[in-house]
Length: 197
Image 1 (cartoon, one colour):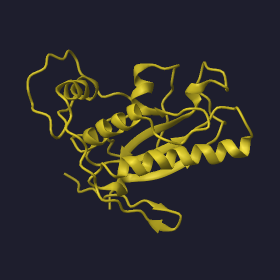
Image 2 (cartoon, rainbow, N blue to C red):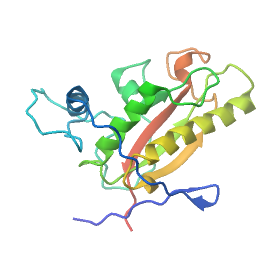
Image 3 (cartoon, rainbow, N blue to C red):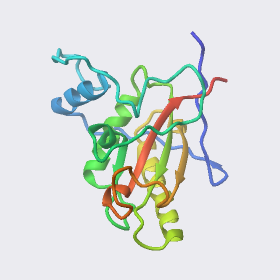
């Protein structure tokens, strides 16, 4: 089996290192939700049997591929379960994470510490709606990606797995939605296998 190199993320010319914060213990319901959605038993969860029919990893966070191909966004439809699992949504003009977004990121961090995602690197892509000035929306989208990155990094054993945090502004609204739709105020979470050393 090929040994994989952990990715080091450089932001603003500095290597960003964070100390992992131990999240609150997951409830039994959280553990079951992670098992159903991702098909893995998260750290801190007991491997108690749960009846799950045909568990599949969601397309947005697939098992890392053997190649080191670039991150590739997946087609999205308005607010499918898949989209909700792989996006963090924000209030208008906001960059603060709501309680439900924090819980979602804690669960994601647990999933990322399990096989087959233990060697996945992440790209966080911030977006905005088209309300307001385009230049301001670009900055806002970048700040949203950074907010998700900062929070997620404190819950990962290796925060350097967050390879990129970028903002695209209002240029890529979700398909099927108006550019002004609140769902466009989001951070998309993309995963790929960390490049081999």
